[in-house]
Image (cartoon, rainbow, N blue to C red; front, side, top):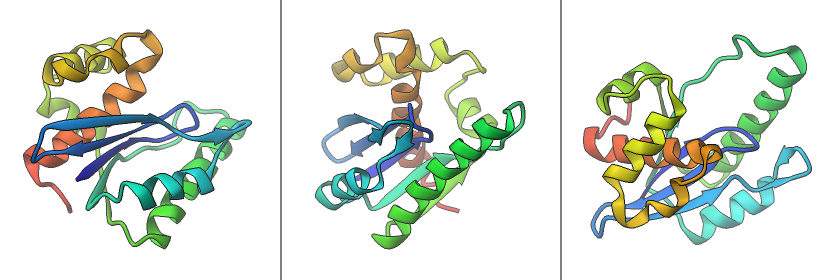
Length: 149
């Protein structure tokens, strides 16, 4: 099983079982405005991925407080993965989006996830579900490309 993560407090986690084409989507666990590391660790202890794919991010166009909060969340996620010895790879947004013929439009990611995972399309129906769609597409990108560099 492999995993795609869309970072952030409002992010998502997609667990993809490629042998059965099963997709399991989870919203990022959080308490107040912070990623809940204990809940995330419990999820990964129960459903232990072989590898995690995440988007390589930066803090351009973020205010200082937003960048700090976002960085804290990524630190919690990275800390949980490191403690559980789950390898993680980051891919540039342009690279994985080009693979699926996407642009910056979040709706396009939802449409692609719905098309590529028609049995599991329900989690992608709302506008705010773009994080779920991107997490699912990151997991599928890892499966299709094997990019673990």
